[in-house]
Structures are given as structure tokens and as C-alpha cells.
Image (cartoon, rainbow, N blue to C red; front, side):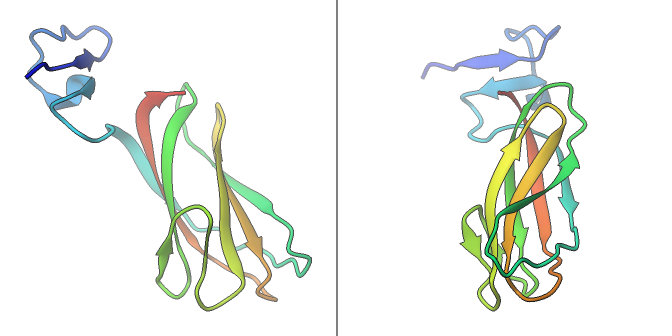
Length: 126
């Protein structure tokens, strides 16, 4: 079996023993998560079915790869593109730039809506 690995800057890939010192290793099948968080904004409604964005700073010095989920108020969890099963709220988009993570949403519930966005920041600069 051939192993492919990339270590962090300043770490010798040939002698590394700590899995946390890898940026990538074919021995492991997941991205390395360097930070995570939850963001739970109260979002206003729009009966016109328009998409809006809310954002949170990611605190990285680069534009990272981010994986995110939305926990709807009925405790159902969805990925980008999914809708709450009990109301007219959609988690529409996920955008990342050099300073923030932007969560797209469409809220046509007729009132404020407070989802919980859970995000994972991976050590993969885009």
C-alpha cells in the first residue's frame, strides 16, 4: 500500500507521528477540523420569498473549506438546500470568503425564525 501524506509547515512528513501534524494523510479519511462553532441568529421574515445572508467571522488568516448544517426549530437537521419540515424556512446557500462564513436563507414564515447553524472549518485553504 502506498501512503500519501502532507504535513504542516515545519514538520517533517517522514518522521511525524502525531496525526494532528498532518494536513492530509491517506491513512485518514476525513478533513482535519481546525475550528467549529454554532451561530444562532434571529432572522426576519420576507413574504416575497427573497434570499438573504447572515454571517459570522471565521477568524482564519485564509479562506477555509467549511462544512455546515442547519438545525431547524423543530430539531430537524439539514444541509444546504433543505427546508424546515414544519414552516417556510430554507437553508439556501453557504459562502465563505477571507473573513466570514455566510449562511443563505429564505424566511417566509411570517415571523422571526431562529435556526442554529453548526459549522466546521477545515485545514484546507481554498
